Image (cartoon, rainbow, N blue to C red):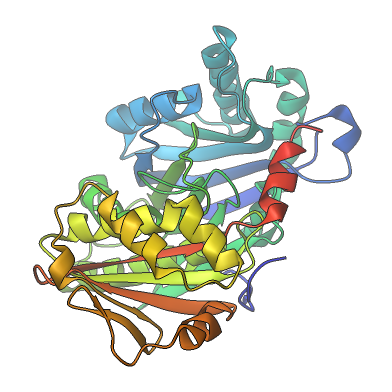
Length: 405
């Protein structure tokens, strides 16, 4: 059960893009006709593109191929093909062959060169990829291409997600629409599990790439469900604007665009945490007083992935000692005498000491809430970061113990 999932408005179509979906039984033949698992995004003119990828050393072939394609063709991307149900990772020597065949199937269906197609896969790792069923699914997806297919696409890329995740924003006359999937194996060190964002704002690839990295660092790199970074994590951003003949954005417009892009990425990232496997609480961790933003993010992530902290969240136990331990385990140089800690507006620690007015019952009241915020002040500098996470319940074990069955 997702934690306070947002009421989503219909995603906005993005000029220059069409999107289609299909059911082909990627995970098993019995699923054909029961759920969609193929998504095909096409661009009528060459799109400028950017991407960020998993830092897991066991990267799926689609990640490596996508990175290579952006190096060679970032100013002329024509399609993205994605599937759910099978990650095509950890599959040995055939993995790259299957990934390339998926790209070629999409290129043929979209009528473009395979050199201008990106791909992504998600699902079970280490299972042979059903390329013949997938080929048919790609062809079927091409017959359903529509400017309004974003919500259907968000549904098609789901695995254990309980709801489709999408968002749109306007920047002046331009549109940004994005979809993502993610629920478990969530501890991104790049971006997210799978996310695809499109815009008609006219921006060159060399501008999009650093912009997307900054947006990801403030959003997808600031979430954690279970501390596991996937083999397939991929985030793509495509812009059709220059291909549609629009003049490039000036510096002021680019700043406004990046602000909206970052806000959209935060919206999507928070949806992933709210829908985390077995999650029953949504917890914001605000770390301030750090020497650097990276130190603040590292401390926040250490708290967010600690099984002891997360189970305390699940038990509504304000066990602040576990939080201190996680801070100390982060690897960041901290001074215990300057650390402060609050849960919502309840002060627990001040300058390393238990606050004189703190009552454990007050802390327990906060930890019992479905949503709350931990404020950690390291007292060492002026930098900060915000991390979003959840608790760790028995349901997480059940979901993942039965994932392949």
